[in-house]
Amino acid sequence: MDTKYLFITGGVASSLGKGIISASLGKLLQARGYKITIQKFDPYINIDPGTLNPYEHGECYVTADGQETDLDLGHYERFTGIRTTRDNSVTTGKIYLSVIERERRGDYLGKTIQVVPHITDEIKRRIRLNASKEHFDFVITEIGGTIGDIESQPFLEAIRQLRWELGRNAINIHLTYVPYLAAAGELKTKPTQTSVKQLQGLGIQPEVLVLRTEHDLSDDLRAKVAHFCNVGVEAVIQSQDLPSIYEVPMNMLRQGLDLICLKHLGIKQITEPDLGDWIDFLERSGRASRILDIALVGKYDLQDAYKSITESLTHAGVYHDRKVKATFVSSEEITADNAKEKLSGFNGIVICPGFGKRGIKGKIIAAEYARTNDIPAFGICLGMQMMVIEFARNVLKLPLANSAEIDPATPDNVIDIMEEQKSVTNMGGTMRLGEYDCEIVPGSNVWEAYGRVSSVRERHRHRYEVNNNYRDALEAEGMKCVGINPKNDLVEIVEIPRHKWYIGTQFHPEYSSTVLCPHPLFMDFIKACAEND
Image 1 (cartoon, helix red, strand yellow):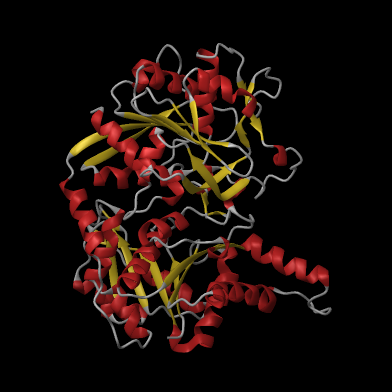
Image 2 (cartoon, rainbow, N blue to C red; image 1 turned 30 degrees about the horizontal axis):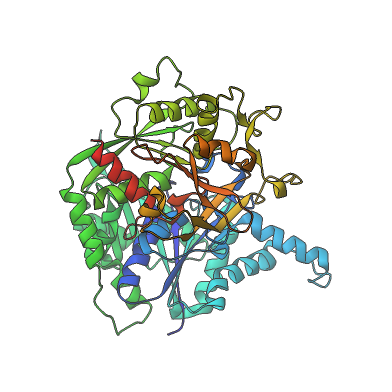
């Protein structure tokens, strides 16, 4: 079968859930036996979101091959289990950089470089790049931003061209919002009509409309939208608010979103979807009633800042028949005097990743509180480093122990910059990124958690590491370095074996945790938290 392309755009407002719809549609097609990939095209000029503050764009997700990407790629992987790559994440910055570099080399033979055709041609090339390297039955392409944004126009022009070049091998799906005006007691379709008219004005006619709504949409309302937007009424799908994002694929299945797409693409041999494991997950989630309270100690009070961590906790909780309630606790507000007030009552504590000095003291105090009160604690990346600093200060009796990132003049740099990072000047895309090997010490708690596996590969995003000059001292006092990179001898995992569960990882296990295959460290952490209930 020729590769089919599905383009997903959004209108009216941002944050309507294009990523969830893309992931859900991918899941349904995958369940029917098709090989799929999903890619995100973001219109901002940054090369990637690696240098963006989480308040700007949520968390930065990292692929196995070391690309810093939009958080939607995390949804794609968690829903479908696919492994995305740097080719699945494209920005305006990447597009322009590629074109400008070619122009500087003289590849365009003296031509005047223009948005059309040079920028749009590069966008089209990138859209088809994944399928040129590996056969996919379906390539789902989500276009970031909203119809009407000036920066999105080259991407929309590119998919307009591709839609006609590919013929029956491509369709357009448009996600819009149907607001409810409480004062009038009515749902309003005019924003959707206007959004579709804007899209049509750009030469794009959507074959399918997905209407985001907080209220059920009547058949009459859907027929009205179909009439004004030149779309079959059966292709007007509602995406109503649901208790969990993981119910969205089943909602889309009930309304036939995948079948409508298949029919528009001329596919006649259609198999029944196999969603048994997904349904089992939802049923287990529905049965789970006991709440597990987990503190997220970090500095970003934003729902999307630690998205992969919260979702990983949720997945693991379901498989332990628990509903995880993750509560953000600002590390800027934690002091030695109020630590008990802020952190008591939780079944477990996650010390979150991050960069920079802000909120560091609170993370160190949280690590001490968890260690001295034997509360299950999971430190991730910077969180793991704070565990090491706390241990060095209070157990090794090195009161000035610190990270060279926080205090370059510290006499006890138990956390130091990696040698290969010392000459780095550009911030973007220069950290230790992507998957690296980690050998695990047999007999350790982590070894048990991984199912007695002695070697794993995990994803990283950092510049600083545990200083090996302090390893012997840490281990002598009870903090064991149980995960080591075999190539450069860097510490990947620390644990305190005598503690209920006190583990820190330099890598980010949340990046490789999925709905149907939760990460073993999150599974083991939740198990310990449940036993601490």
